Length: 137
Length: 168
Image 1 (cartoon, rainbow over the protein chains, first blue to last red):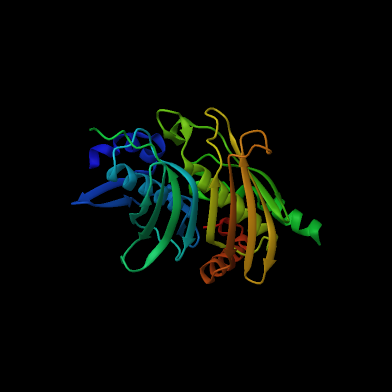
Image 2: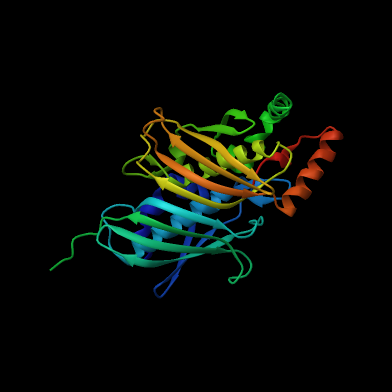
């Protein structure tokens, strides 16, 4: 499962954010390790909403890559991000679930949290363009 | 009145992007800030590539850029004195940004209503009639933001930098 994420993990921006993935069975959890460069407002201090949004987009891409062999990285078509709590200066975790996967478009939702799984800091819903590998006969 | 706000915003220029570690880490540059809008440039950088095969910037960079530009437009429209937080950000990725080109986000605050500001923005790589992405966002002045802005004003009086004016 993790080996299918190789192309995603080799992207310079994904490496810059330091995003990691752990999988147990068919469950994939993404981690955005805390770094000072993720702070949006240093006096609160709170993580930048854009960093959390980007992290959730990466998590959605990873879930799609893990679910099916794809010929290219998924491309976001549209996303909607809800910010529920200020992101504290700490690691962020996220899990994605694929609501529907068609032959071209997938609908994915992502939940991100910090200390408590039940207390989400943000959520994302989005459509992604995918290019599944032809099924072998 | 609007001239006063413009002068106030101009005085904050050095802090609106560079005062936000994440925006600075991505190399964002403030182009314009007015009482109802903001534009911010993301110079093309190899370390922000999202797809090694196409060398296109990662969608997340455009997300962060539009979030920051929208947040700055909301901040300016609310008078430039209250830090805000994103409530909701909706993005349409209309086409990939051209590899090698900077992306410019132009955000305009459509309406301020009490604690809330509603913003729309586009991102383009040279031709604003052929956008890369567009965003619709809502922002709110939070208690944490108000407390931070208060601390910043106190520090400003004491001679320190007003970095809490930047958004989260």
